Amino acid sequence: MSGRQNDVAPDAGRSGLEGLGRERCAAGRCNTESRDGGRRSDACRLTDAASFLDDVQARLAESLSFAADAGGVVTAGLPSSALVEASSLETLVRDLLAAGGKLVRPRLVRLGYLAARECTNPDDDPATTDAVVRVAAAFELLHLFGLLQDDVMDASDTRRGAPTAHHQVRAAAAQPDGPDAARLGDSVAVLAGDLAFALANRLVRALPEHVADAWDAAVVELVTGQRLDLVFAAEARLDEVSTRRVAHAKSGAYTVQRPLEIGALLAGESAPPAWLSRFGAALGEAFALADDIIGLWGEPAVTGKPAGEDLRERKPTTVLGLADSALDGELTRRLAPGREPLDEAETHAWLQRLDAAGVRAQAVARIADRHADALDALAALPQGAVRDELTRFADELAVRDA
Image: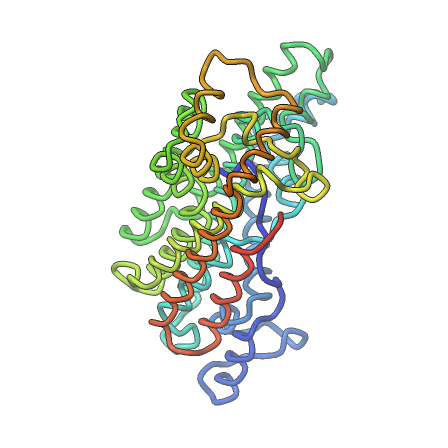
């Protein structure tokens, strides 16, 4: 559950994998037509990134239509109001989905599958393709669940350049500035997150048992990481071991490593390839570190969040873990429970101190190391389109400013 939406990823359009699919289709290994001339075969839709993402978006739209129909049965015949409309759960989820995001996790499910098994293998069938699409869409819904509830926990005002769900509902209340409106907004936003989670589980209902177990473990890992994030923030626990554990569970693993691994399981693997897990773990840590740097020093005009937000909120991030070590625990003592929160001026002064102590430089160096580790892990994968696309993902996720 990342407190920022940093779904920066490679171009969503056609990748080198599409060319791979065309060449093999031309050689008679699968039947396909051009995108303008008709639907590609199921196998080639996985090699074509753009077609795959079209299918994911269609599955997300179907999920939200299902929610609207099921909810409509409950509300049929009841008079409507501005507040009833503003609190529509499927609308809140749909609006957040439509507001942006690069579908990082769905893309990585696809790449995990392709890395473990050639998509154009004649044994691939529509059921396999559908399973990959369903899991990819489920990961995006899981992400929306995390964002909606994270925004309530962090009392965030904006998300993806728009008011957060709880603020939208609050604004429609009879007394929008009152405590009842705040409680209502928070409660409805939590329910919207619950709906996204329920729809994600609906999509993975028919998975093979070992894949379903991996999905369930990823969900428990995510929510446990978020729990530790809240608890460690309350305690101002900023030691490196604790902060790295939180970053792995609530950011790096569910963003990078678990989508890749579950994609590989869908290809028939009984366990994810070791090299793929190493790649995902290393790139996930680099992603989380970059996210943490942005949370401290990111440009508000780019991130939509004020600089130093993680510091003011005592977030147990990996960068603050590095800072606590560099300053011999002084930061933990200043942020201890019961102390006055940092104001804007003191936050700015602390950010300058962290920079002067080399904390940002150390974090950047660690990102470079983990990025290199991820690329080293790819050596186990033969040269080709899948390896090239994974390399581009590693570059984009580790080196970014939003």
